[in-house]
Image 1 (tube, rainbow, N blue to C red):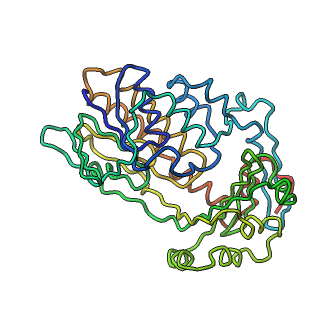
Image 2 (image 1 turned 90 degrees about the vertical axis):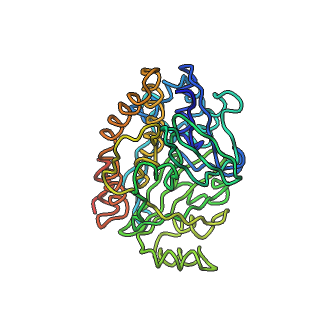
Image 3 (image 1 turned 135 degrees about the vertical axis):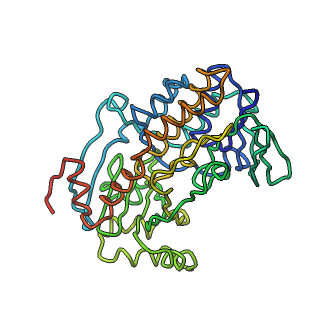
Length: 377
């Protein structure tokens, strides 16, 4: 393949570019964001031994990854709405050996960016359209009117992928769950009771239809996601409200004040995020010169797998290309066959985890799933 074009500078696209580079293959990544610092990159990620860490090893970045691990970040607590602790699982002393160490998404993205040659990523290039040429090549048109043609086009462009339209008409569906993102700063001084409940890693305070989860980040930060199972019209009204926090707090009436503080005392403006998924079992017939990685291919509700699968996709695609230097279609067919098989159950598994968190059995179903419940429901 003479030219390889990757749309999207998320973890999947950057891992693909890096592993291609390790094997002597150049690629260009186009990203809509104007710069690497234009927005925050989300919170903590647990990087799995069986996929995310394998991808980073293929990228030659294991040492760099270990340097950014959040020590103690794997600690897990499950609470009920009264702040009763049902599960208290401390982190292993050796976060790397325990299999799922935590890192900040922004730190991981920076590690990948810094590993690439200058000019690999072209910032501020928002895709307006994609099209197939008669010779099997593809054209990408950007919002600024510029275009590129490429032998291989890879959609690493997330949930609302433009590239996906070349392969399937499948599109994301609302799961019926919405997250509201908040932050508390300087928690060990300003919010001591909440900080004590949250502990040093992840906390999941759950009830049927709603929950509040947090992750401890460096610098005394608690990053929270308030979770609500609500219909779209309710979310429409929430987004249109002049008092988003007040409306959300009403839904948590009767919850322990130390937990409710994660809603009412946020130090940042709340961000409403509807959770979407692709239909179960999305597949496509092989289309020459184009494929997908990560959420563009198999979007599922957040359950700790998305980033890991995206990076693994990127690494596996790059390795397939390296293994078939003279036959790009053989590489794409090999990659897609394996990717379809390994992600077949990802959406179902993610939905099951989400239901454990805020379904009818919450929080006791999640406590039982973790296998360390200290109180019975």
